[in-house]
Structure formats: C-alpha cells, structure tokens
Amino acid sequence: MTFPTVRPARRVHVPPPPSGQLPDPGGRTPAERAHRLQQQTADLYTRWRGSFPDGIDPDELRDEAGKFSVSDAALGLQRPLDAVKDDADAATKRVSDLVKDTRVNDDVSSQLAAQRYWARAQRGLDAAKDPAKTVAAAQSLINSADNTQIPVLVEELGDYLASRNIPTGWLSDALVSRIPGLADATAAATQKARQHAILLQNHNALTNAFAKDVAAPQLIGPATATAQPYGG
Image 1 (cartoon, rainbow, N blue to C red):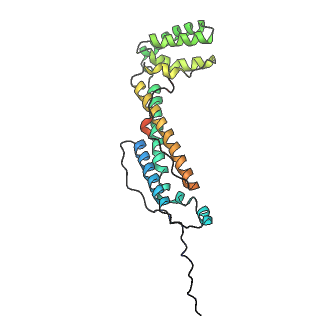
Image 2: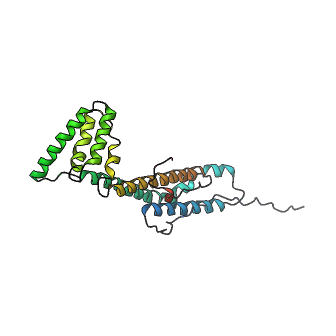
Image 3: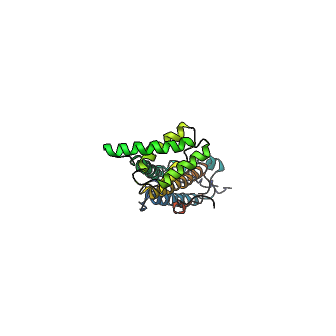
C-alpha cells in the first residue's frame, strides 16, 4: 500500500527591510524637513513590520530583531537631525555675536566718555555692599543707560559682577531689550534649541523601536516648540 508523500510546510522568514533612500520630503526649515523624514521612516517601518507573514519561527524573530536599524531609511535619519542642531547652534551664536558686537567705538572721545561713565557707575555699584542690592543697582544702570552707555555695560558689567562673586545669569536677559535685534535673536535661538530637543527625543524613540522591533512611537512635531517661558 502506498501512502501519499507528506511535504513539510514551506518555511517563512522575516523579509529584508526596504532599501534605498526615501523621497525628499521637502520642508521650509531644517526642523520641518527632519520631522517629515522621521514621519516617513516611521511609516515605512510600520508597513515593513506589517508585511511579516504568519508562521515565522519565534527564534528567528528574536534573532532578526533590529534588522531595520541598518536600513537606508534608518541610517538616513542622523544627517537631517545634525542639520537641525547646526541651525540651533548658529542661532545661539547669533545671540552671542550681537552681544559681542555691542562695543564702545574706538575713537578717543568715545573711549574717554566710556571711561568716565564706567567710573561713575562703578562707584554706585561699589556702594551696594549686599549682593541683592548690587544686582538691583546693576539693573537700574541698564534701564537708565542711553544707547552710547549700553556698550560700556556690556563690556564691563559681567566681569565686575563676577569679580564680586555675584551671579550673572540674569544679565543677558536684562540686556535683551537694550540691544537692537537681540530680543528676536534670543527668541529664535530658544525656539530652535527646543525644536532640536523634540526631534532628538523622536530620533531616540525611533531608533529604540527599530533596535527592539517594537511599534513605532508617536512623534512630536517641532511646530509645538515656541520661545515662550515654560510653566505659567
């Protein structure tokens, strides 16, 4: 008696991750472009995981976890994120440059006037023995200084306060309204830094999902970042 041949079921495997770069998503800013690429990559990853056939050996699933991490799409996420960081750094440098560029003119009359003004200002600061009163006196100087005197305070006030071990963390904010363009530059730097922080969080969450072969995380858009103070 002849029995029919029983053939083993065909074994199925984890499909290879998609290859090739994703289409250029565009974007008006580095942050917007990076976010769109993150969204594209997360969608591609989700569709790839959804393409797994039923019946893959659990050991193979375990051994193949993290395969998407070396895909072209996953590896392409770092460069646009770096561009966001570079943009944020440039915005921060713009703030620093605006402060540094606020300097007393080199001509003799301007230098002499600056010396006389600072001598008067320093006497008033020296008279304030208590650190809190010194900070209040410095703030008063900033508020009452004219446009030719602000550069003197920019050059001298930080070093003076530091020499007396008085905190200067408040100084940049106090000068914002007195240096043309500084308020806008500071707001832009704050917003761009927060956008980078959001996109870096997205990036880390995505790469963690790729490595562990778990569902893609919900991504936060950089448009939610503003220069407004936290809290409130």
